[in-house]
Amino acid sequence: MVTKAVFSDPFSAPGRWFRGNLHAHTTNSDGVLSAKQMAFLYERSGYDFLAITDHGRLTDVRELSNSGFLAIPGEEISVGASEVGTAFHLLAVGIEEEVPAKEGDAGEDPQRVIGLAKDRGGEVILGHPYWSALSARDMLSLEGYLGIEVYNTSCFFSIAKGHSLSHWDELLARGRRPLGFATDDAHWHFNDHRPNDACGAWISVKAPELSLDAIMKSVREGLFYASNGPEIRDVKINGDEIQVETSSVSAISFVASLDLGERFAAVEGGAIASASYRLRGGERYVRIECTDSEGRSAWSNPIFFER
Figure 1 (cartoon, rainbow, N blue to C red):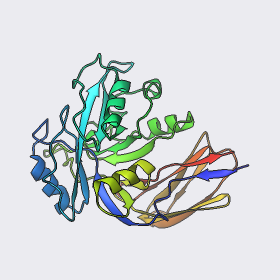
Figure 2 (figure 1 turned 30 degrees about the vertical axis):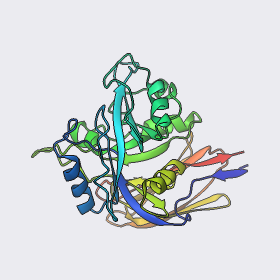
Figure 3 (figure 1 turned 135 degrees about the vertical axis):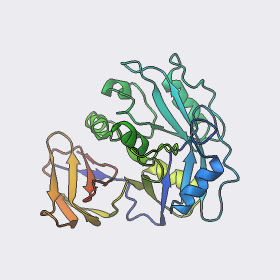
Figure 4 (figure 1 turned 180 degrees about the vertical axis):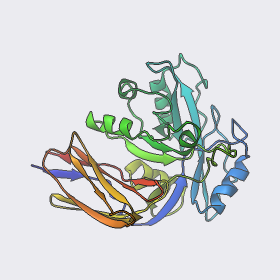
């Protein structure tokens, strides 16, 4: 029997919704646009905040914020070696100073880098696990990271490895509680056969105001959902039933531990905007995923059940 549902609920939390991307590169590393150009692009595209996460260096973003747009300091540090020899890509977001670790150092301990980032006021997101070929053992070997990229625009458009949903479920099934982030990993790299990797994904954060402290506090608390298209408008837990309301989509899924969960699909050519799932009693977690007719999705953070 379910005794307690644990959910960081952004839908009933006070405040406003703010849209942002926590992974972007500029000419300070391997991006095409300057930090100023990247911030202008995202602000013009309706984003409220953007983290600049250049490789191995902290880009100065202090002059990029204004009353309606927040630039967040960050850094991507690629270190260590997975089971197959690939690096762990660690997004250090909200840091107060550069993380003293050598970019690309296979001998560097990623756990130490996570600690260094947190010591500097930041949080760490594990970047694109599928693209990085990380195994469950790789991810379980680290502690202290806030969550993982469950969707990465650049990884999807470049080599079709943008979704790390099975990696997320693997961690959740093993008792970890990582949050799920959708990011762009924007470089402004595109051509006739590869769509633009900017302004394609985001997290929608509920916060009292658009400030670094408020946004980072809400992110830490999991008061957001991730998306590259649809909206999740409400999630309610009433006894043993979970109810969700969304924008118009073609399917709503309740993804749960083991073989539990359920998927609701619209009739061909139709749409749905709500669904409910009755718990069966063995769920350790349930997360909600909705997908529209264009294949774009939104993902809630997990609801955990303690017995």
